[in-house]
Structure formats: C-alpha cells, structure tokens
Amino acid sequence: MKICVVGAGSMGGMLGVKFHNAGEDVTLIARGPHLEAIHANNGLKLIMNDGTVEIAKGVKATSDIRSVGEQDLVVLGVKAHQIAPIVDDINSLLGDDSILLTIQNGILWWYFQLHGGEFNNRVIESVDPDGKISTAIDPNRIVGSISYPAAEISEPGVIRHIEGLRMPVGELDGVEKERTRMLVDLMKRSGFKSFVLDSIRGETWLKVLGNLTFNPVSALTHATLVDICKCQLTRDLIDKMMTECREVALRLGIGIRLSNERRINGAEQVGKHKTSMLQDIEVGKALELDGLIGAVIEIADLTGTKVDNIKAVYALISLLDQVVQEEGMYIRGEKI
Image (tube, rainbow, N blue to C red; front, side, top):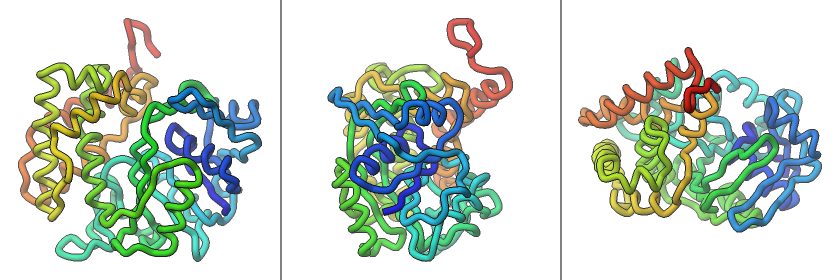
C-alpha cells in the first residue's frame, strides 16, 4: 500500500516508522532539521517506551507534498491549524479510492459533515474559517482515528514513545466498511491496538475531555500531567472544565463514557509527561488552540451551554500564545 504521512512529527513519525517496518510503501512529509536528520541517517528512528529501537531504514522523506503523487492512504499528521494552508497540496495526494486518515486531537473540520440532524454540514469556523477545508476535501474520503499514544520528538530524526498504542478508527457516517476493517488490520500488523468505533464523534469527545484541560493548563504552568493531577487546585480546575465539556457533548446527544475522576487518574498514571502544547510552548511554536478549545467554545455557544472555566483558561492560553509568537519564549531568563 502506498502511504503518505503528511507531518512526520511525534505521532505521524511513529505511524510512519511502524507502517514502513510492516512492509508498506511509505513517504514522510517533514521539514527543517527533522527532515535533514532523516536524510542524513537514511531513516527515522523510533525509541519505544520499553527501550526497543525501531528504524525505518531507507524510508522516503520530502518537504514537497505535490511531488509524491496519488496515494492509497494519506495520514494527516499535522496540527489542526496547519491544515488549511496546505489543503490543496493534500488533495494532490488523493485519487478516486484514496483514504484520508485524520489523527489530530480536538474537534476537526469534519465534525458536522455526514452528521445528520439540526447541525448537518455546519461549518465550525474556529477550525475551518470560511469552510475552506470542508469545501476542498470530500468527507466521503475521510476516516477518523483517535490517537491515544503519547510520543515526542526527542531530537531531529528521533521519535520517543512515552506510552500507549491504542489507535481505534471510525467512519464519519458510523457505518463499518471494508476500508475501515483494512485500516484496523494495518494498525494491528504495525503493532498498534485498534478496532472499529461505533461512533468516532463519541470517542472524539472522550479524547477532547483530556486535551481541552491538560494541554492548556500544562502550557500555562509548565507542569507535567502527574504534577497537575497531584496539585489539588489544578486538579479541581481540570474537573470543572471537564464537567463543562461533558455538558457540551450532552447537548449534541453524546454521553462521555468515562467519569472525570477516571480520566484524571489515567492522566496521573502517565507520569512526568509534557503535553504536546507544553512541548510547543517550550520551542516557541504556535499552539493548536482552536481545535482543542476554540471549537468546543463555539459549539457551547451554538448549543447555549455555559463554559466559564473553559473560556477563562482559553483567554489566558491565547494571550500566552500571542506573547510567545511576538516576543519569543524565555526559560530561566534565557530566550529560546
């Protein structure tokens, strides 16, 4: 199978290594020092949490999406806010039978596509301004995946797996298809734990419950997951934000299957892990605020749900993002 991973960062890179070593024809889209290291080392290295090392020797890698050609499977590994500027390039990879697999955190542009009911095909402006992505990409090509593994780029050309291998997949219309089963088989052959979801949206809200809360709080405090959970004040704030998020989901007819306490305890057990948003803050990258938080606030307003705690944290993390982008990031008095 011809597979292109658009965005070979922590999760995209991990998938790319696993798929390549499972015998698939993989092309990675990367840039900068990360791409240079992949070329220099003739491959991308993945260090698993048990210490084993996997190297995608000879894997193809480029920064030029349009040079790759049509693919059987396109894995969209870039952050949600990075999709719109490259949506036409992404389309160049898609043939009549190509699958576009989304692995982003948060609420994505396709949430109300093939949804049915009152909000069917409604554009979520916070993640898809003017409907640019919705218009460009046929929703029938899309399969969603919820990425539970935690990983990070420890240095250019090296991905470090922190924990987790769960990668379920689901169709937007909720109907299991041959391609869905094929993706599950691919994930399993590549070493992931996968299955077909009855509701990709229901599982999305379960993941959002953690991303919406732990990501911004960690970026604001520079604290790891276990630190946030063990501090009673931040633990209480996380619980309040989760309760608000849960109410938004309920307004759309979705009950989140895990309690706040179980979700918080699960995060605590991950340990001294820096969330993706904290990792981005520390290197001065723009934050993926809209998919993780802004879209939830937009849907809350749409459904008449009060989310005062979420809005307060969103205001603070938005200002921090603005300051970092304008002035840079300082750690212990040193600009990075």
